[in-house]
Length: 351
Image (cartoon, rainbow, N blue to C red; front, side):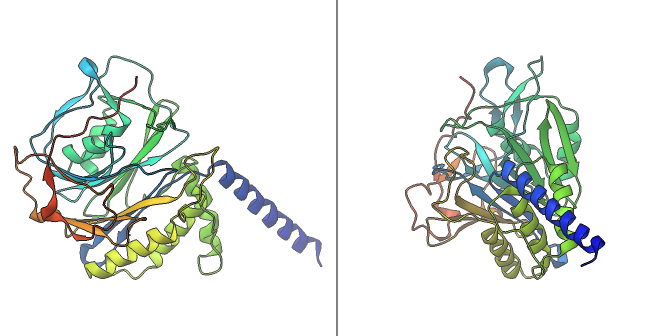
């Protein structure tokens, strides 16, 4: 065997070893991907992976709702311009959702997140950021322009189970435009464009893209990484969300996204005690942004529930409404008319 060939094998082996070690260090949870179908059939899917039940339910929030981050006098305050359907986490924060204009926002874990130091700006807790984005913006471009002004300071809170509340955020709109917001070393970093199609967790987004370039050169039909680690899930989601049939048919598009989300999910019962975010997929959402239908699939449930936003009264004073999923695993089908009026949950704040 020629020396040059041996060197190529050695270099490839070392590179794969390096990528594996990086993945081991960056093994966190959740995956989000945007599907570009034909005739504007945009669909965003995500998985929620966690070490325990987050007691998630679905909520309807109307327009004209007075909002704040529940941080007292220094809390950011606003009034919702758009109504939304959201999935809660621990009834203490908005983890995921879509507003009536088809803007989708997602919160995912990122261990490297470091938020700004205390200053004179109004504050917004991490669990309220997704709701702020859904309440205020119809498009990604609008949201990015506002976020660049950095008129408020994001404050991290511990999850109710004691895990660090270090997260990053993604948004997508009806056009397929996307943005990712990360706080790295106290600074807001924004990635914006249709190319920001997939997001997982660690390492930070710029490094995820570099890792994914390697797998693009190999080609998904030759080999794809198969572990539950973030970098591996990023590579699989990037390949499959584009390899799937790009359809104008909403049923086909939603089915394709669900199939991709299931491919990057972590089977139930798998967790790493020392790293609580390497955990089973507890639920998945798929948002049909063209037709304004929000799907939710709990992995302990035999069926999927969905909500048709075009059939919801979002008018001011129409009231906050809740669909209780926690404790109702057999719920399935169209649940648009089954929400019950209730009081809004409070956002979790630091002690």
